[in-house]
Image 1 (cartoon, rainbow, N blue to C red):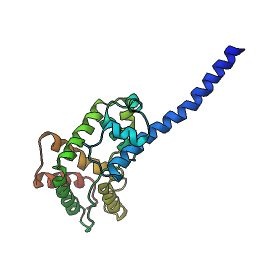
Image 2 (cartoon, rainbow, N blue to C red):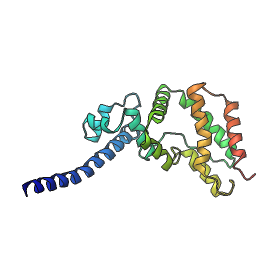
Image 3 (cartoon, rainbow, N blue to C red):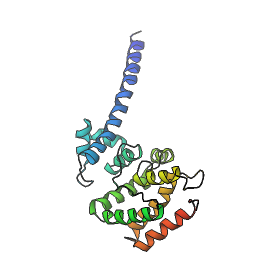
Image 4 (cartoon, rainbow, N blue to C red):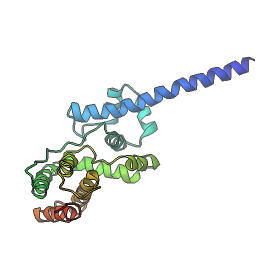
Length: 207
């Protein structure tokens, strides 16, 4: 009887522990967003120790779920807690001109050292991530909530895009090659950006 009681108690403790673990997991993701978005820390200033302190958990708790800080930041981003910081995309009524102007602006911002370090780290976390990382990307696009996607949604609402076009997919078709080019070959010029925008929009615009 005593053994049965012990086993039942252990099972009950296990059931109570899982929600607390999940709560800690979510607290870590929220902490990353607060540190980078609300408190304005740079990616290089961000450390696992600071994340742990902000989340109210031990450092080993973080390493139990993630390989490094890049992996934590990537999940916080992919779950919608952390927002990528981009300038607002203008809406002059000319989508092609608006996107090209915006990309030129973002190109200048991307030359900041911290932006490049973060981009390279997140790319590494993505490449080395396991099944959970791949599942996150199946469920959500990293560009879902960004200003670029919103501008493309506005164009769709105005009837400027072909029926059934996914705005986040259009944003991804523009941004993914841009980032890969930036991290491998180097800073693209204005002509490259304009050509990339033209190639993508040619397949989605009604006119």
